[in-house]
Amino acid sequence: MSCKEDRGTVKVVDGKYKPSGKFHYPAPNTPIKDEKGKLLGITNPRDIVHMHSYGGEAIFFESLGKGKLMATKCENPDCETTGSIYMPFRIFCPDCLTRNKVIDITAKAKKNAIVHSFMITERTGAFNTLPTPIKFVNVEFEGVCTILMGALIRGEPKIGMRVVPIFRTKKPDYTILDLLWVPADWPAKDLPEGYTY
Ligand SMILES: [Zn+2]
Image 1: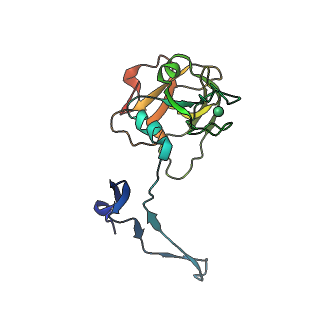
Image 2: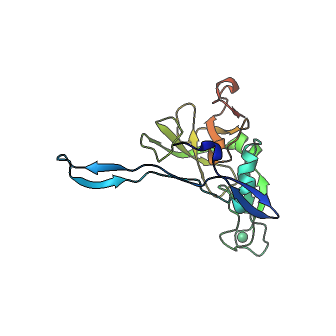
Image 3: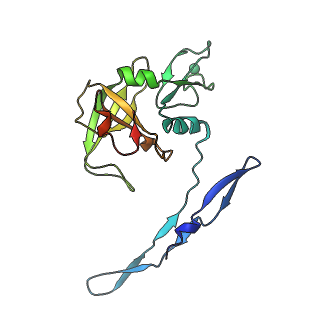
């Protein structure tokens, strides 16, 4: 039973979300029985379309598809930590709670991002689309006071190695997977499909 053509979508009319199509897909249950055929329970398949509002982070996700990495910076002169740059993108300064300024750190990321630490995992979460083993890297940027978790999609991670971002600029899907990492100087002809420097 598939009605994917009627899959829920959202338009904005007069500043308000206007959903159309289907957002809930029931599917037939199946019984769970023990070895002797006694009923223990049922599976309960459900397919739900979520509406996920990005709010103040929307510019971060939109920029990835344009090959840009946007961070934020506290510019409140009265803040104890004024001038701090945040990547991952923080809408508000955690110290003074004023709204941060959005800044472009693409050039910085291309020039001096390094692997602070990393981990490699064979186990994945639901709906994983990354090839396993997944090489998660904690990326450190010069002058940025936080560390970004990302996935190294080529090569092998080492602490301190230089990495550069690649962006899904051809058909972005507006998730964090529009941003991946490769070792510095990796050949542009060997990037995953749809990704560019
Ligand atoms: Zn602040």
